[in-house]
Image 1 (cartoon, rainbow, N blue to C red):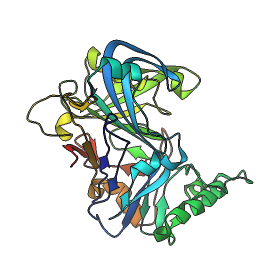
Image 2: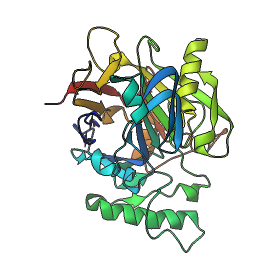
Image 3: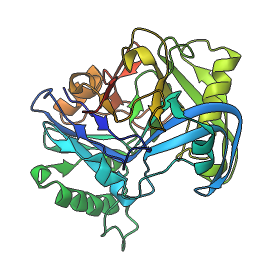
Image 4: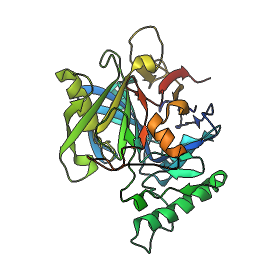
Length: 345
């Protein structure tokens, strides 16, 4: 069992500060979870609001606050170890500031969506690393062989985590197909998926949503439209998730979304959305602490766990590569995810 806790200070009161912590061990088999890229962004939906050009993008209808941005090398290639801590503040060397135009118009920042976007997740399991694309590494040049490139990047990753130096990179390429992590509940594999904590009055129960991109040549100019969901959605729900995913701060591919309502996020006894105070006398948290936790006991499906125990008896998918390496979701919630928000002391 493991957990990530994200702790940060509201932008009006000081610099961003975050901590991740692995709390409880699942078994001695899982040593840690790997994140290729990580983005954490909070969104407020304000129809009609449009800020002037700021941070290279216009803000239209959706104001955003970036907690972690994968554009920095520090937010790539890190491992949440069992029993260890990750200082997310170190992953964000250039703290984001809310648009001054927004600060002039609003007294607080209301969190309608809190998105945690993960790319190319992997697992250190029983002295083998089951992962796909490793993004970093200084020694990834000089060869066109993908596995050799990944071997070199993996060596660089182990230099950051000497406690993992007894691990080897599992060679999915030798089986004739590439590794892609799949999330139980989605029909297709995807290199990136987003866990989105949403207001309960908007999304009263967990739901998986898959979107398709329809235009744009780069991640910041894509428009996303609803394609599929595990439960029926209203037109308003589709509009909200499409608007968030098409926001200029959208990171990479924004197709697979796991929506989790606020009841799993905090407990105030009502359905009020979380607010961060931007002014001294404003309503909301002054120094909030976000603690995002997920349970390593619920990290992998039984099939994936047994395949890893047996040394990797994987099979080729009919509709995509490697369906066997699948992260588990229970009642629409992956990893036993929970998020709590408290005022920082």
